[in-house]
Image 1 (cartoon, rainbow, N blue to C red):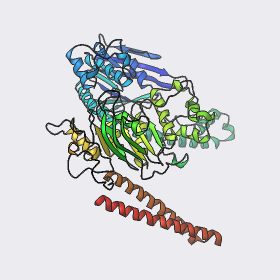
Image 2 (image 1 turned 60 degrees about the vertical axis):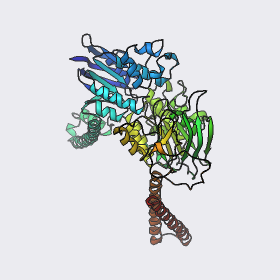
Image 3 (image 1 turned 90 degrees about the vertical axis):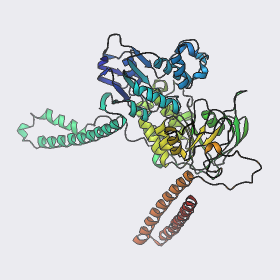
Length: 605
């Protein structure tokens, strides 16, 4: 049965189309994922499908008596408490419990945070019997267990499904078709997210090939026309003009001009060096008011190059712990020490405040008035072209504003980066670029995220907060944590320690005894003799990679200088300078090799 049919619909912004001439049919059993960069009109399209908005052009037809459940990106809730908003029956209570809202059913909706309100709105949609589910970022603000439950529920839904999500695992599992919005056009790909990636890459290659062929044919025709006899010159003037325009014209505008260059290629600065001491937490405890402790007696030692993920149920204190690490929040107990070389960048859930009346270029320039040429280039690398730089911040989509906030954080050149739910509202292209950047970035990263693909790419160790004041490192790092979640042992509910045991988490760079599980680790004792710091395998592997990079760079410099000496084309004074530089490069190679050998020995010990 046809649920909704779009015929030649269009929506535009003042400076460009979002989508044009788009036709789409959604029937019972269809499972459509919608992807595209921020600002391509995904949320606008979903509102049109759900009947919450109308396209500027075209027709929208819906099946007779089709029931639609719609989760907006920023939903509105009716007044009252959570129970009245979702419903009093048992299934509403069960869904709220699955989404982490079971303890807040009597809470007034106007006191909820944005994430809590989104979960209540999702429960409202799921509890109703509908024929078509239209969901805009349903996994935002859900923890990993809630996402797994939602993924399973959507995979069993027998009606039509249209979903926008940045969660690649969810997209690949629940969708059988992908609608890609790109430069005002829509492309439908059969299959899930993996099939979309392959098809989109093939289309990009075909477009590049077609553009090359088009220009070559135009050049050939122009040359042939210009060689014609003088008597024939007047007749083909129009064709000459057409061929000239083809040769000199531009190909169709790219959706984004090249890859997002978060590293900056050294043109806007490099990451400041980190010393051995980064951030240390000793016996840290925090609670709000007279409430229970979110974490208690927490010891954590972040070393240079660490990749740590913070996971746990909603409300377990992950964002609070990030605030403590960032020194935004003074803990109720314990001590936080920050190294002298630390330059902190914090990309939090709310993002830095942006003035909606300010233009993008003014936000980047700050109080300096006009942006410098380096800042202008940086905006372009974050896909804010010349037109977008003049756009008021308030006209940007939610995802574009988040990308601007990410730009402002990275532009400060931090060497310690705290990321709180970075995948919320960022499009998949930006997420992949951020993952690639962090893969080679030398600084320390602490990530709170519910996005499994992002965690897989960016973290090595995982600190699990159990929601009862306990925190412990998951045995085996993120890989061990992910395996434990997908294959739980009988009678086991979590990797984190049981309620009441609450041993302090050990740092990725420390150990807490041989063998035992996270839940059996002994608590730290002030009477124990001090132990030498032992660096974790993840830290050692990262330091090995940095040493290898140093060896490669120093070796290349050495070879260049040797070639310069061999050429002997400069004067004696210049040659002496080259020889001095060569000695320095040789020493860098030796130092890097010795450091690599020491790290390899420590890793194998």
